[in-house]
Each structure stands twice: as C-alpha cells, then as structure tokens.
Image 1 (cartoon, rainbow, N blue to C red):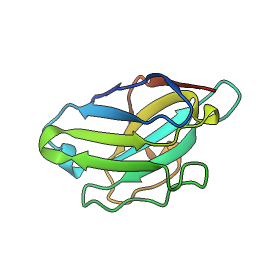
Image 2 (image 1 turned 120 degrees about the horizontal axis):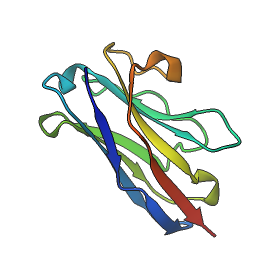
Image 3 (image 1 turned 135 degrees about the horizontal axis):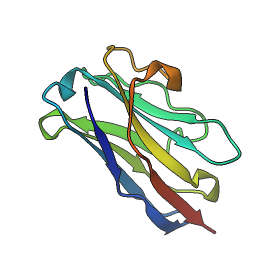
Image 4 (image 1 turned 30 degrees about the vertical axis):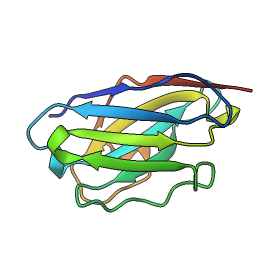
Length: 124
C-alpha cells in the first residue's frame, strides 16, 4: 500500500513555471513506478509523464514534450513534475499515480494508487 499526496498547484500566468510534488508514504517507494496524469471536466484523464524506480521515463506526450520534466528522489519518497512555459491549455487537476511494475506505462488503468489531485490554473 502507498498513499500519495500532491502539492504545488496554483494559479500562474502563461509562460510561467511551476513544480508539482507528490509525497508517498510507505517504505517501498523506490520500487514503484510513478506517474502524473491530468484531467479537465471535458476530457478523459490524460497521461503527462512517468518514471520507473530505475529512472527510466516514458516518452512525454506531444502536448507537454520539451516543457515538462519528471524526476524522483527515492530517499525523500517524492516525485516531481517540473512544468515550464505553461499554457492555458495546461489548466487541469494534476494527479500523481503509482504502480508496482517497473515499466513506466502511460494508461491510467495500469496504475493502482492515486492521489487526490492538485489544481493548476494557467491564465492568459
């Protein structure tokens, strides 16, 4: 079992940067693959990034490629999402997720544990 708590969301202007954090409980955090997804009322949950406990990361979707960076600090039980050059279309609730497999998969159904989400709003 692992519990996830996201933080770092907020209201920013376009072209600003923001870093989200996801703190995980449990002593086996280093064995989980971690991911970020985002969701708006009009869209299904969208994959944003994933990183395995070995540091292997999945390809970012085109919508965030070149702007977002995912990283993790295993001793701190934390995964980060650095978001740069933010756009209004990045506005969403961002969720942290975890799975026990080593592959950084990109589908929400492949993840077993989820945080409550943190709101990111990007104004023009």
